[in-house]
Image (cartoon, rainbow, N blue to C red; front, side, top):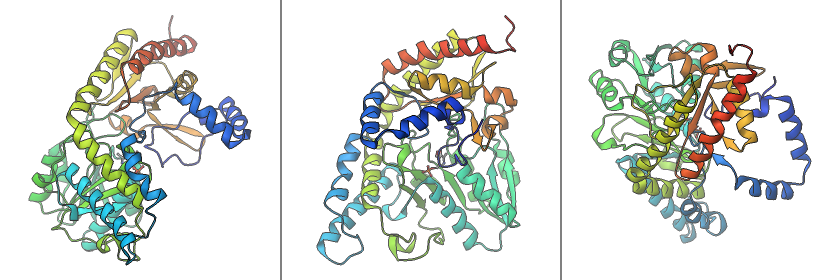
Length: 431
Ligand code: PLP
């Protein structure tokens, strides 16, 4: 099987049918169609799509699109320019800063807009290391997204010491292990708020306290948590927090980094004096406005939406576990995001299941990351003690604002059928 060279722009679990040859033929035929026809066909087909992959990305909320559209169509001025036309764009960016700050319960001045969650994470690492050059040690976990794992691995190659904290079989971290890992020369502790594959939520308040007691900067990748659980930074002591627009119904290519106003900071991108000298580069005004609106909507709907999504997710999980023997929820014993369901099915290959679900217009993800020519078991599920076959038999379903009971009905009908078909084909199933 061949697959795309690099799947790291996604949330790592979404490498899909592109690995298979028949899929490739279909892909080529599809791409020979004129773009206009492709678009029309896609729009017709997408009406029928059951999208259960909201941890990979989310649909743009119509209110978000409406708020940002004027900054693509009409208000195109460079926000740094001196005339009043540009001031309107600057004002809109500042309003977005207030909206994002409200979602995170922090000061607007503590928000730095970036191009994505990955940039936010890299900036936090860079700043922590630049402001404490004498410190050569990092603490992080075995279940981070590659947007933290890769920077940590890169630092290791450059002579830093990196302590990676493991998780138990439910995906939980030990606070004692984190406390014990911190050394006098620790430059940064980085622990994600919620895991993108299993939805497991980590005790960020307690970890922030530990780091504070030891006087070490703390960063959390809250890309999957923001908009899904309450975040009150005023009540917490941490230095950096990353979010990403496309996980909360804003477009791709915009994110933000919270930088505690008492923290020393060193920018990652150097150039102009944008973002108060904290992130050079002409602001992506339309997307920043979109992120602001998305944050406002998320805050407004958080409690009601999470209850609704949790009910959908729980109904889905209960039905699947009843209908499919030898299925298990990964991370079931830990606190989890309301929207995420990672399920391990014995005796299947998730890549085959994804292709069959794709035929049925169901979008979800695998518990494996696709690397050139091979399928590696997910590092998250492996860290939780799943053996290769179990990790490779896992699927992640993630629900969101635009899912409804009909989506769950469809999934409950189709997923067990697909798993049953695959098991019937499996040479290892004893019948
Ligand atoms: N961190 C987590 C936990 C994620 O799930 C993702 C995306 O999947 C990222 C970081 C990267 O965010 P972005 O795609 O905005 O770079």
